[in-house]
Every structure is written in C-alpha cells, then in structure tokens.
Length: 146
Image 1 (cartoon, rainbow, N blue to C red):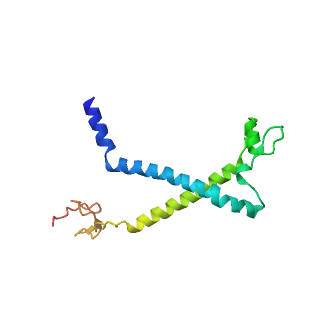
Image 2: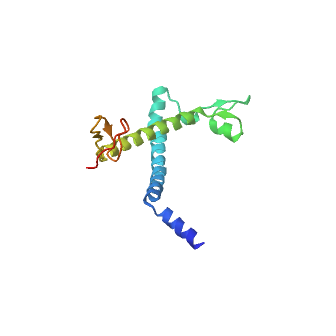
Image 3: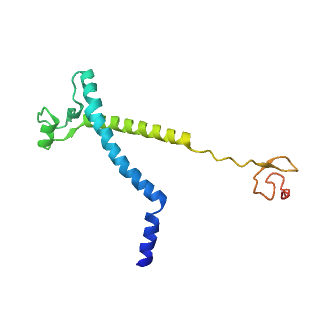
C-alpha cells in the first residue's frame, strides 16, 4: 500500500498533471463567464434585432397540448425541442473556441522554435543523411565519424 501511495503522489505532483488540473479549474470558471456573456449580454440585443425574440424561450412543442412558454411545457412534462437553448449553447461554443484559438495562437508566437538538426551529406553520393547515421541509407556507404 505504501508503494502505491508513493506512485500516486509522484503521478499527481508531476508538472503536466498539476498544469492540467489548473487548466480544468480555470476553464470551468471561464466557461461560466462566457455563458453569462452570451446569455446576459449578447443574446438580448440579438433577440431585439431579430424582432423581440427571447432565445431562451424558443421551443417546438411535440405534444398536442397548447402551451405558450417553455417553462409551462417543462412544468407539464411535455416533450419539446428547446432549440433556443441549443442556439445559445452553439454561440457559447463558438465564442469559447474563438477565445481558445486566440490564446493558443498567442502562446505559439512566444514559443521558441527549436533549431532543426541539419542533415549531413554523404561524402560518396551527396544525399542528405541523418547526423546520427553510421551508414548512408541511399548508397549504404559507411559514413566516417567527424
């Protein structure tokens, strides 16, 4: 049991696991911020532009009973397709994906590019050969050590 706990501690405290945990926590909080921005800031003006539509209340009633709001349909346990909620979630996703794309592209700008190892040329056939190679893959000649 002691070795299991030591292995778990070594796993849990590795840099990648801790970084991932922090990312999940921040991502969850950021998701709430984006959802609030979509529901409270973006959708109301968009609904007004479309003609006073409240996206959160858009639904398709699949039953024969008449209801006027999504809340009434849910209270009566009627089958509905809540496409207004779906539209809101799609906009949520698009905004979240755009922000993540912007962050990743920003991080990639700051990332150092590792210099690529220049392939050496075979002294016999003049074809590029990996610097670690001992024989040329093209002409099979033995490559002299430098």
